[in-house]
Image (cartoon, rainbow, N blue to C red; front, side):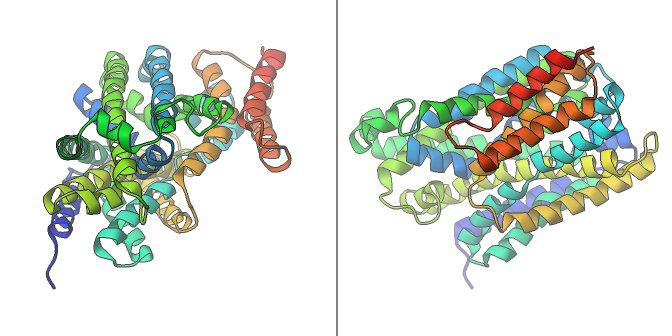
Length: 438
């Protein structure tokens, strides 16, 4: 059997990342395994934050292909604002605290029941299932080994080195993945520009609505994503990296610098999606994959696909790790017992990966998952987390978390879709604080 260049190049990359992660020195202490001994440097934090945030790259391609530049607003500008607020007002508080996770913060500020409920929500919020699905789509596209086999292979390469090396493995592999995502997409954008032309080509081949805001979406749906971007405040990956930073100054600077890289990459990826819409008449797999096979020579095709795999893998290992230690440490572990917490975290990583692998079979679009989990997560956890960080007290904190969760769920099931479910849930959380604060 003769393998193509993309197949050989991608296999080499997968093995390289796996080896780098797996050969990371073993960490036995909880502080070392979960937080790299709280010595994560500024460059490592930036590269990890930037690469982790882009797991849904196929969805960015699909949305850019279908809706145009409004994608930059939905998945870019709203999140930059949220990240900047996080950097200025939240990151330093997390870094200088001894509370290493959101459930532990709730345990310390409220009570055990509130911490357990928060941990359960975070496990769903941090599920890597949609990203595992996207990785499987790419692997199956390249190797044609079947979707189920692709899911299993993608999960093994993305997850199992974290069981050995912990957070330090995640950081080391994120450095490679950060480099590949920019090399791949920037190289492809330059190639497309030289081959097809620039702005004149795009405006000639695409309808004007692709260059307008809100494009073919409505303003209500667009603004809902402005609130969904608040999920940044309760993102356990942001919390973990802020806590693992070598200083609160670095925690703040890492996020601010990351915003610049996110802006650059969003521009590159959205414009690449526009090129896909201008070049491809019909989508067979996904806009980016079809663009690679239709418009790129083998070497660039392999590089482009590797850059997408790097983006997705960086998100999978981060999400499965943080959901794993939420299961193992915050739900099952024992306080002040390093050995048990590290062992349970390793079990939690395997459990999270296994459940996510099963769930990945049933998901359609990652955007829908982000929308639903973001709505529930922000409604239930945003106000309680801000209260915990700023030492504000409320009566019955468990109800403070549960009531917005129930209201959001009822809105999803029983009410018209003209009003997004996050709004009543978040409003109820604010009202609860105003009425029952101490």
